[in-house]
Every structure is written in C-alpha cells, then in structure tokens.
Amino acid sequence: MTGLVPLAAGPSPLWYATRAGGTVALVLLTATVALGIAVGGRYTPRRIARFEVSALHRNLSVLTLAFLVLHIVTAILDSFVHLGWLVTVVPFTASYRPLWLGLGTVGFDLLLAVAATSAVRLRMGQRRWKAVHWLAYAAWPVALFHAAGTGTDTRLTLQLALYAVCVALVVAAVWWRLYRAGPGRVAVRLWAGATALAVPVVLAAFMNSGPLQPGWAHRAGGVTPAATGTVHPAPAPADDEGGPE
Amino acid sequence: MAGTYSLGIDRIACDGYGLCAELLPERIELDEWGYPVVASAPLAGDALRHARRAVAACPALALRLDRATERVPDRQPAQRT
Image 1 (tube, rainbow over the protein chains, first blue to last red):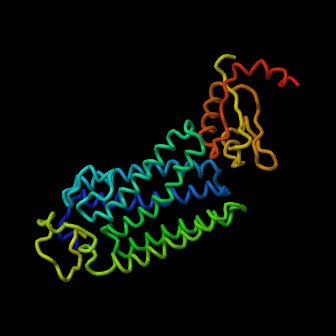
Image 2 (image 1 turned 45 degrees about the vertical axis):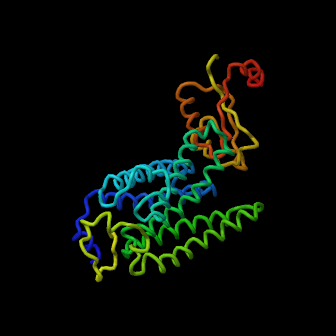
Image 3 (image 1 turned 180 degrees about the vertical axis):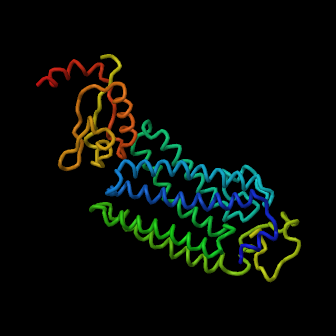
C-alpha cells in the first residue's frame, strides 16, 4: 500500500495532524459552501426547517475555521517543513512549495475576511456584507487547488475520490442554484455556470499534468530536500516523490 | 414601556425566505406569498431573546428590532382598532 511509504520515513504526529486537518477542513468548507448555496437558493427540505439549513451553514463555517487553524498551526509547529508564522497570512512567502502553499494562505485570508464580516453582519449592512461574502466562492477553488497541488495524500485513490465528491457537490449545488434562479443578471449566471464547469475540467487537467505525474514534488517546489535532509537521506528512484510525501 | 422593543420589517429588503416565521412563530406568520406578517405587540423577556435570534438569522437582514419607546403612543390607537 502506498500508505506504508511515509510511515517508513517516520514523520511526526504533527505532520499527520496537518494532513488530516487540511482534508477535514476541505470537506467542511465544501459542505459550508454547498449549504450556503442552498440557503441562497431557498432550499426547502421536508425533514428540517429552513433556518436549520442556515444554522448548519453558519456552524459548519466556524468548524471549518477551527480545523483550518489546526491545519495551519500543526504545519508550522512541525519541523518536517520549515515554515514561519508569516506564511499564515502572507501568501507565496513559503520556502516549501511556495505557489501551492501560498494558495492555501490566499484561501485562508479570504475565509478570514468572510468570517470577520459575517460576525458583524448586523452592523455592516447587507450589501457590503454580501460583497465580501462572495469571496467564499473564490476561496473554495483556491483551497481545492492548494490541496491538489501540495496535499501529501493527493495521489491516494481515496483522497482523489474525496476531491471528486467535493467538486461534484459544489458544482451540482451551483447548477441547482442557477436552475432555480429567476430572470435577470444574465451575465452573472452565465459566468457562474461556465466557472462551475471549468473548475473540474481545469482541476482534472492540472492533476493529470502535475500531481499525478512522477516527479511532482520536485517541480512543485522548492528547496524541501535540502531543508529536511535528515528525513530523506537519499533520492529514491523507485518512489518518485522527493518531498515529504 | 421604556426599553421595550417591537419587530419591524424592511419590506424592500425582504425576499420572503421565511426563516423568521420558523424561528418566531408566536409573532410572525407568512402570508400566502411567503412574506411575513408581524404582530406589533412589544417584545420582552424570552420573546425578545427569540426575536434577536430571528433578526440575526434573516438572510436578507430585513427583520429588525425597533425600540418601542417613542412609537408606543402612536401605535396604541392602531392596536385597539
């Protein structure tokens, strides 16, 4: 099993915590986004009330942030890759896979803005709150590409299935929402529908050309082998991952 | 009546999501198009607590709490009719 390879290298529990935290955060973010779309589209389930859908959206968003904090703090505390606290808020400054890790920082920043404005929503007014809240739609694909680009478990079949389910859920929610939308705002609807189609296509193409190809760890980034030389004593040609996979 | 509140609805902002009627059925009913009809009686105690929740839950921020102090004299005749 592929799972045995990292065990042999012996990363710390923190590294497993950051991977698990990131994966759970992605699942929770996906659920939050889908529920948010459901609220916007006036989803009216038979078993539960509409305010419960809305409350679930809010509560899961807080839970998402909690797991994101776990994901980020454990990644920094772990000595497997050397990251400073700066990377938590300033994107693309990491020495390890700067682009793909930076996407995670961008997503976190966007979600922080969304969360902060939602906390003072009653005071800031609906229009301004909503303008910021739309950033969540940007944060989700950014988080997805962060996971695909730098996720240690991206190559596992189960993880790929999980990504597929996440993408399918949000795309289905967006299309359901567009189906329910009334006339007007044609440009926005066309744009949203096209983007919802483009994200899985681009993601699949990226996965095929990047993370699922041999040698991705070297191309993705960075100076990892030098920084964590003790973990990888020698390049392993059989296992094409040079980074801490 | 000082310090009491009553519910108000921004009719332009309201989109008829209907969450308020689920959260505060003792004060809010939905008309046949799904828009809220609000009882104008002042709120206090538990009712006020539930009302605050309903206000926070409104997806359109169309539900609000008005301080009833200056409005009560105007409203009393209307309530009696």
